[in-house]
Length: 302
Image (cartoon, rainbow, N blue to C red; front, side, top):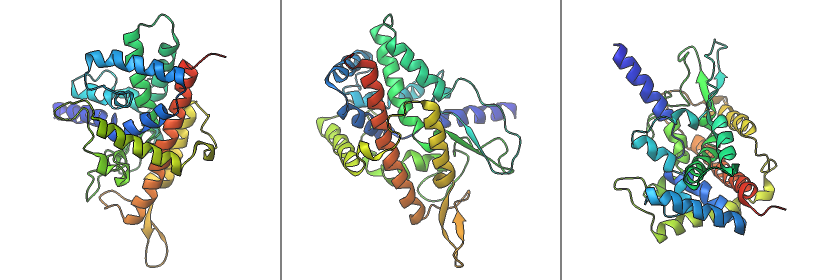
């Protein structure tokens, strides 16, 4: 019985560590890439080539985005807790466990320090650039900042992984990884699928077209806090989105009262429409913020 419990716990943590599927991470990276200055772009291109020597699938900067998730597929789980922070959404005011200090906020800060350090070797910079790309994107997926605690699940729902759903998505986390359906049509662009293959030029162009479309819909000037590069702020920002939309309204009953998405529900068209709007904005915002970080780290010094 104990073996079953610990296996389930390990599986829960492993699943929790993944956010946005490959295509979502690549969209964030492409938006950032399109907004890099010349010096920063040259630097990330050189570091991408360094990572690509060991991982041939990494044939473009955007592939650094999903690379950290592929480490888990290769049996590397030392970094799993770096992908999220569980700010409690406490429905019933129950006692919640303390949160680990080593989380996604800690990891982003570590990445930036390593990338700034002049003594860091190129291979280490390449790996931690990839982690940074991934974690900035992760933290803008609302369920990577939130766990819902309730009388039914007093230990928390592990970022929606234990919030089961009916229909096309097995649970709430998977639903939001897929952008509430917004990213579904890009599921064939998987450099770390089976087999693992570099992206084709056509696939890169598809991601670029999606990135450009998002930037057209949501220009950088339309975001109030795009220049806020504090991951603590991002976590709270995403947490608020979780409370309002992820665990939010699925529609109204026949008396006009709000009905909220509950475990074992099937997401309604109203819920998906609202969720996709949040996803589009968060993907775009994460790309702009990543670009700002990389321009600051690698751009020309004034």
